[in-house]
Amino acid sequence: MSTSPSRPTVTLIPGDGIGPECVNAAVDIIAAVGVDIDWDERHAGERVFEAGIASGVPDDTIDSINRTRVVLKGPLGTPVGYGEKSANVTLRKLFETYANIRPVRELPGVTTRYSGSGIDLVVVRENVEDLYAGIEHMQTPGVAQCLKLISRKGCDKIVRLAFEFARSEGRRSVACATKANIMKLTEGEMKRTFERIAPEYPEIEAWHVIIDNCAHQLVKKPEQFDVIVTTNMNGDIISDLTSALVGGLGFAPSANLGSDVAIFEAVHGSAPKYAGRNVINPTAVVLSAVMMLKHLGEFEAAETVEHAVLSTLQQGHLTGDVVGYDRGVSTSEYTKAIIANLGNRVDGYTVRRVNPIQIPPAPKDPVTVRPTSREIVGTDIFVETGHFPEQLGPVLERLADGTPLRLKMISNRGTKVYPDGNRNIDVVDQYRCRFVRRDDATPLELNMIRDLLALIEAEYPWCHIELLQLFDGQPSYTKAQGED
Ligand code: NAP
Picture 1 (cartoon, helix red, strand yellow):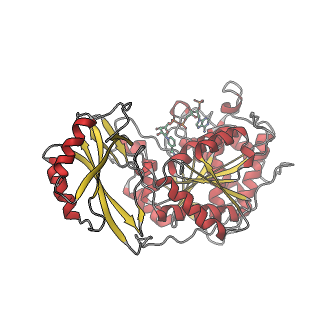
Picture 2 (spheres, helix red, strand yellow):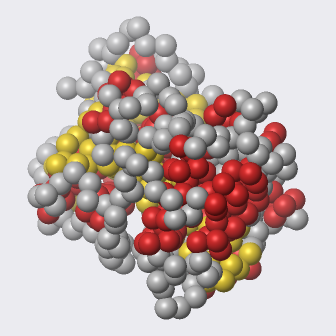
Picture 3 (tube, rainbow, N blue to C red):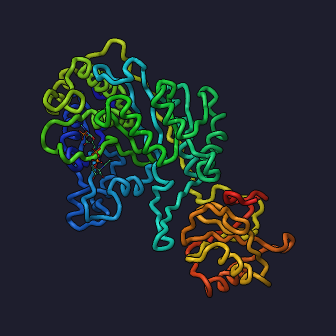
C-alpha cells in the first residue's frame, strides 16, 4: 500500500513506563499496512537520566534525529531526583519544534457525555515560549518569579502554522485563545499577530476567544470549535481538557512540528502503574503514527489505519481505561483487532482527506521588529526590603533627589502602594519602584540609570531591573493597578 518511492528512516524512541507497549503496537500496525520504514531505535528519558546524562537525551539520539528529522516516541518519565528539566521539553527545544498539534474527535464505540455532538477539533499550541521557557528566579527568599516570554516571531510562526494546518485539512475556522485582556503585551502579542495574519486566509473564519471562556465553551459546546491556536500554557491545559471530551488521554495523539524536525507522540505520559501489564490503550500513539504517516506523504496508509482504529472501536474492542480493567481487552488483542480491520471502513465516519501542510519558512534573523524611533523614559527597579511603602517611598525620593529621574510610584505584586497607595494590600518584601525622567525634553541615558541604581543599592538590595522605553512613541510597558 506504500506510495512513497523511497524507504523513510524514522527515529524510534520507545520511552518509559507504558511507552514501549504503545510504540510496539504502532510499529506492528504500520508494518501490517505495508509502509516500509527503517526504524532507528534510540533512547531518552528515565534510563538515560539514571546513566548520568543530565538532559535525559544522549548524543546518539540527537544525532539520529538530526539525520532522520522524523521521530515516533513513547512518553518519557523524569525520575524523582534526576535531571532539572524534562527530557520531553529538552527534545522539543533542541529541535525547535515550535508547534504542538493536538487533534481530538468523537470516536465510534467510545461513549462519553458528548457522544453525538460530533467533536472534531485541533488545539495548535505554541511549544517553546511562554512560561515554559523555564526562566525562574527567587527574587527574594519568599518571592518567586517566572518570566513569560512571548516573541512576535514565535507568534507569527505558530499563527501561520495554525492557518496552514487548517487549510491543509480543509477546516472552516481558527479561534485564537488568549488572556490578552489581562496580559496586554505578552498574550496581546499573540492576539495582535493573529488579527494581522488572519486576512491572508480569507476562506477561514478567524475569531478570538478569551482563554477562560474558551475552557468554559469547550465543556459547554465543544462542537463549535474547529482549530484553536494558543500560547504554550493555555494550550497545555485546554488540550488535556479536550482529550477528556472524547474518552481521555488514551485517545489523544500529537505532533510536535518545527521547520526541520517533526516528533510524533501521545499527549499522555508514561503511566508507570500500568507498565508491562499489557492493559493500556495504545490508540493515542497509534493515531500519532497516523499523523506521522501523513507527514511522510503516506496519505492512503494513514487513512487505512485511521479507519481500522475506528472500526475496531465501533466493534467494541475497548481497553480497560474505557470499560474498566476487569473487562477491557488487552493491548495486544486490541492491536491485533486493528490489524485485522485494515481495509475496513466505518459507516458515518469519514476521515479527513488532507493535503500536505506547507510549514512556513521561519525567518532566521533574530530581529523581526525594527522601530524607527526608541527612547528611554524611565526604569523599574525591583528592590528587596521588609519596609512598608510609607517608609520606602520617602527614602527613594530622597535618593533620587538631584538626579534626572524621579520616583513616580511603587507597586507591590502589580498594585500601586505609594504614593496614595491601596492600604488593603498585604505587601511582600519585593517592590517595583518606577522612576521616570524629570524633564520630558531631556533624553535619558543608560549611565543615568546606572548612577541611580548605585545610589539605591547603598540602601536596598535590588533584585531586578527593567527599562521603560517608547518604541515609535508607544510605551513598551504596562501600568500598575491604580497607576495614573
Ligand atoms: P500520565 O502518565 O499521562 O498518566 C495519568 C493517567 O492517565 C494514568 O494513571 C491513567 O489513568 C491515564 N492514562 C494515560 N495514558 C493512558 C493509556 N495509554 N491508557 C490508559 N490510561 C492512560 O500522567 P502522569 O501520571 O502525570 O505522568 C507520569 C510520567 O509521565 C511523569 O514522569 C511525567 O513527567 C511523564 N509525562 C510524559 C509526557 C511525555 O512524554 N510527553 C507527558 C506527560 C507526562 P487512571 O489512573 O485513571 O487509570
